[in-house]
Length: 359
Image 1 (cartoon, rainbow, N blue to C red):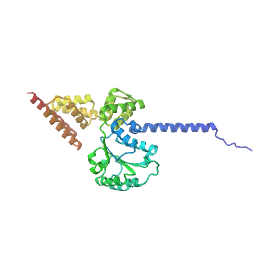
Image 2 (cartoon, helix red, strand yellow; image 1 turned 90 degrees about the vertical axis):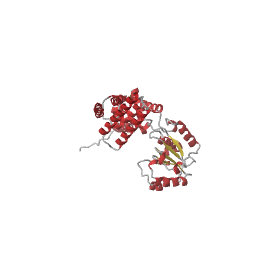
Image 3 (tube, rainbow, N blue to C red; image 1 turned 45 degrees about the vertical axis):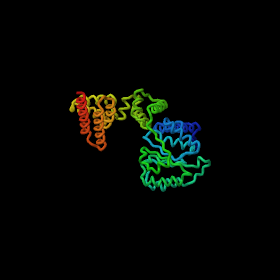
């Protein structure tokens, strides 16, 4: 009689399988960490981490500490720290469970009157079971509040009046003129201006060091220049450029963003100011096609270059008006070649005015 023995996995096999699973899990977590947008990965977690606007942040911090937080209206250009400041306030008020104590609505949500009557009012009317004075006050965060309809804003005004004791409202927008006066008067307003180059540079250096990136000085300067005070834009450009190449230089940054290089703008400006119409058109159109440049980007950079040129005020004003009209027409999808001809014609007229003024 033959006896068959059942094979039994040894402890070493279990340990090997467990180690393999742990390696796979660690690899997945590493890949997930790399996939996180740096805008979220390096978002300030506390009010102390907010890079700029220290006067505003310190005021809000003091009001939060003293339990005197009013309804807030934060407005200003994108990427200046408005949402990060409010989320940092929420973390300070509620700690790690802050997500349960705030209702956050952004541009992807419906902004009609039904949202105010149902979702916002339901959240504001329910009583918090948390203990403590601070934790009992909930927070409604309305990002891009200027996208709300006028009817929804009037309905929100009544909700704010009714639930002030239990809920604070924080409205964030880019254009404060789109918020009705009745809402503005019920909130403490803070304007977040575009970040200056110093704060953008400091934050970028922090991210560059944390990620171990190879960024040249001219590449860093290009990131700051193209951001225009928008920290979110600066981080997005940095991350996308890093995904394209390991060494980040000025030329790489401009290439990845599709913006014309400063030396290209100087060359284009030279052609506009010195060449005949046909030659200027041919050379600019060839460069635009070869480098994949958008005419609207060229115009915006040329406008900044025009300010550096010495010319009579009347000539400069007329030239700026002409370029503004061309940019406006481009926004409606007008033909690029026709508008390029208009740009060259505007500079030809300006050159004639300069010659006439000199004689």
